[in-house]
Length: 158
Image (cartoon, rainbow, N blue to C red):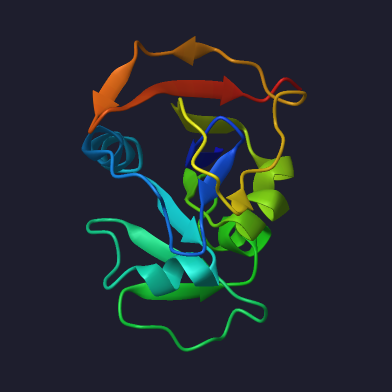
Protein backbone atom coordinates (compact mmCIF):
# COMPACT_ATOMS: atom_id res chain seq x y z
CA UNK A 1 0.00 0.00 0.00
CA UNK A 2 1.30 3.46 -0.87
CA UNK A 3 0.44 6.22 1.58
CA UNK A 4 1.30 9.90 1.46
CA UNK A 5 1.57 11.59 4.84
CA UNK A 6 1.64 15.38 5.22
CA UNK A 7 0.58 18.27 7.40
CA UNK A 8 -1.17 20.99 5.39
CA UNK A 9 -2.59 24.38 6.23
CA UNK A 10 -6.00 25.58 5.05
CA UNK A 11 -4.60 26.33 1.59
CA UNK A 12 -2.80 22.93 1.30
CA UNK A 13 0.47 24.66 2.22
CA UNK A 14 3.21 22.42 3.57
CA UNK A 15 6.22 24.73 3.89
CA UNK A 16 7.77 28.12 3.30
CA UNK A 17 11.25 28.85 1.99
CA UNK A 18 12.41 28.45 5.60
CA UNK A 19 10.79 25.05 6.12
CA UNK A 20 7.70 23.89 7.98
CA UNK A 21 6.20 27.00 9.64
CA UNK A 22 4.57 25.26 12.61
CA UNK A 23 5.82 23.18 15.52
CA UNK A 24 3.27 20.54 16.48
CA UNK A 25 4.66 17.90 18.86
CA UNK A 26 1.38 15.98 18.67
CA UNK A 27 1.67 15.77 14.90
CA UNK A 28 5.31 14.66 15.16
CA UNK A 29 4.23 11.82 17.48
CA UNK A 30 1.39 10.89 15.09
CA UNK A 31 3.87 10.83 12.18
CA UNK A 32 6.23 8.51 14.11
CA UNK A 33 3.36 6.20 15.09
CA UNK A 34 1.90 5.99 11.60
CA UNK A 35 5.19 5.51 9.74
CA UNK A 36 6.70 3.11 12.29
CA UNK A 37 6.50 0.19 9.89
CA UNK A 38 6.98 0.19 6.17
CA UNK A 39 9.41 1.96 3.88
CA UNK A 40 10.01 5.72 4.04
CA UNK A 41 10.36 7.59 0.73
CA UNK A 42 11.39 11.22 0.43
CA UNK A 43 12.67 13.64 -2.15
CA UNK A 44 16.07 15.27 -2.24
CA UNK A 45 15.02 18.49 -0.47
CA UNK A 46 13.42 16.54 2.37
CA UNK A 47 16.51 14.33 2.62
CA UNK A 48 18.72 17.39 3.07
CA UNK A 49 16.62 18.45 6.08
CA UNK A 50 17.36 15.21 7.97
CA UNK A 51 20.63 14.91 9.88
CA UNK A 52 20.11 11.14 10.13
CA UNK A 53 17.62 8.59 8.81
CA UNK A 54 14.40 7.94 10.68
CA UNK A 55 15.21 5.19 13.19
CA UNK A 56 14.09 1.60 12.75
CA UNK A 57 12.83 2.26 9.22
CA UNK A 58 14.30 1.89 5.74
CA UNK A 59 14.81 5.41 4.33
CA UNK A 60 14.77 5.84 0.54
CA UNK A 61 15.52 9.01 -1.39
CA UNK A 62 14.07 9.53 -4.85
CA UNK A 63 16.85 10.51 -7.22
CA UNK A 64 16.98 10.98 -10.97
CA UNK A 65 19.14 7.98 -11.71
CA UNK A 66 18.93 6.04 -8.44
CA UNK A 67 22.70 5.96 -7.97
CA UNK A 68 23.39 9.20 -6.09
CA UNK A 69 25.76 8.89 -3.15
CA UNK A 70 23.85 9.47 0.10
CA UNK A 71 24.72 9.60 3.77
CA UNK A 72 24.71 6.28 5.66
CA UNK A 73 21.21 4.98 6.35
CA UNK A 74 19.68 6.46 3.19
CA UNK A 75 19.25 4.45 -0.01
CA UNK A 76 18.75 5.95 -3.48
CA UNK A 77 15.78 4.82 -5.58
CA UNK A 78 14.58 6.02 -9.00
CA UNK A 79 10.82 5.83 -8.40
CA UNK A 80 8.08 3.98 -6.55
CA UNK A 81 8.02 1.24 -9.19
CA UNK A 82 11.73 0.59 -8.59
CA UNK A 83 11.07 0.44 -4.86
CA UNK A 84 8.17 -1.97 -5.40
CA UNK A 85 10.43 -4.24 -7.42
CA UNK A 86 13.02 -4.25 -4.63
CA UNK A 87 10.44 -4.77 -1.85
CA UNK A 88 7.24 -6.30 -3.24
CA UNK A 89 4.25 -6.12 -0.92
CA UNK A 90 5.88 -3.66 1.50
CA UNK A 91 3.93 -0.65 2.73
CA UNK A 92 5.40 2.64 1.51
CA UNK A 93 5.16 6.02 3.26
CA UNK A 94 5.86 9.06 1.06
CA UNK A 95 6.88 11.93 3.36
CA UNK A 96 7.56 14.78 0.92
CA UNK A 97 8.36 17.26 -0.36
CA UNK A 98 5.96 19.08 -2.65
CA UNK A 99 7.35 17.78 -5.96
CA UNK A 100 7.44 14.21 -4.66
CA UNK A 101 3.84 14.45 -3.49
CA UNK A 102 2.80 15.82 -6.88
CA UNK A 103 4.64 13.02 -8.70
CA UNK A 104 3.39 10.15 -6.51
CA UNK A 105 -0.19 11.07 -5.59
CA UNK A 106 -1.54 9.23 -8.63
CA UNK A 107 -0.10 6.00 -7.17
CA UNK A 108 -1.37 6.59 -3.63
CA UNK A 109 -3.87 4.26 -1.97
CA UNK A 110 -4.35 6.53 1.06
CA UNK A 111 -3.52 10.00 2.28
CA UNK A 112 -2.81 10.73 5.93
CA UNK A 113 -3.36 14.48 6.25
CA UNK A 114 -2.84 16.54 9.36
CA UNK A 115 -5.16 19.45 8.65
CA UNK A 116 -3.73 22.56 10.29
CA UNK A 117 -6.60 25.00 10.77
CA UNK A 118 -4.83 28.21 9.77
CA UNK A 119 -3.18 29.83 6.76
CA UNK A 120 0.59 29.98 7.22
CA UNK A 121 1.26 31.71 3.87
CA UNK A 122 3.22 28.75 2.59
CA UNK A 123 5.08 28.75 -0.70
CA UNK A 124 5.13 24.96 -1.16
CA UNK A 125 1.91 23.01 -1.48
CA UNK A 126 0.40 19.55 -1.33
CA UNK A 127 -1.35 18.72 -4.63
CA UNK A 128 -5.15 18.88 -4.97
CA UNK A 129 -6.67 15.60 -3.82
CA UNK A 130 -10.31 15.94 -2.79
CA UNK A 131 -11.63 14.86 -6.20
CA UNK A 132 -9.65 11.57 -6.12
CA UNK A 133 -9.87 10.66 -2.44
CA UNK A 134 -12.71 10.41 0.07
CA UNK A 135 -12.50 11.52 3.69
CA UNK A 136 -12.93 8.31 5.74
CA UNK A 137 -12.01 9.49 9.22
CA UNK A 138 -11.21 12.66 11.09
CA UNK A 139 -10.04 13.10 14.66
CA UNK A 140 -11.21 15.63 17.18
CA UNK A 141 -9.28 18.90 17.24
CA UNK A 142 -5.83 18.93 18.83
CA UNK A 143 -3.87 22.01 19.85
CA UNK A 144 -0.16 22.77 20.25
CA UNK A 145 1.11 26.26 20.91
CA UNK A 146 -2.21 27.83 19.97
CA UNK A 147 -2.35 26.00 16.61
CA UNK A 148 -5.42 23.79 16.09
CA UNK A 149 -5.21 20.72 13.88
CA UNK A 150 -6.88 17.38 13.23
CA UNK A 151 -5.85 14.07 11.70
CA UNK A 152 -7.60 12.84 8.56
CA UNK A 153 -7.42 9.66 6.51
CA UNK A 154 -8.40 9.83 2.83
CA UNK A 155 -8.55 6.50 0.93
CA UNK A 156 -8.47 6.58 -2.85
CA UNK A 157 -11.95 6.94 -4.34
CA UNK A 158 -11.15 4.64 -7.22
